[in-house]
Length: 177
Image 1 (tube, one colour):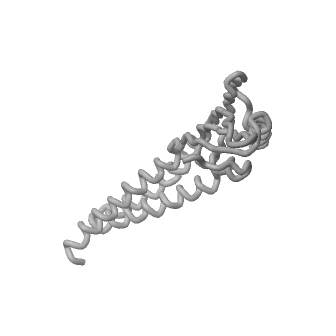
Image 2 (image 1 turned 90 degrees about the vertical axis):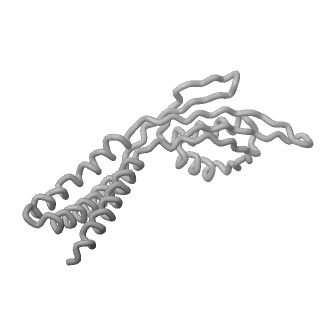
């Protein structure tokens, strides 16, 4: 094989391995966001709906500031079996490619580099240990008078972005801004 092909293939494979490393690391990244949402429901009924919604999703009330309409819910987020297996398989593919390129570069010890595949379960273990964690959802409700006798409720929510999307869909909340 051409002598320029192997080093360039090695560099590209190394770059892909670095990308895979950061992809695995990002799988456990905290994705907490804060958004303002509006609802046509009055403040008291919306608070009841929110409490029912979060109790159905296995969250419990951690703190209540009733005069200011602030509530903090807490729940445990379980890791995904699918994602743990997927990350392990991605890691196996990446380490196999890196091992094959290293085996071509150093043919005398080629078999040793193929054992890098044995490290791939570490990606699934890393995800499993870091992804299972306790998360909080903080809510602050406000009432806003509109033209006429109708009032809207505004909610400031700080939670994981997936939880925000599910809550908006389930309770028909509209984002502001």
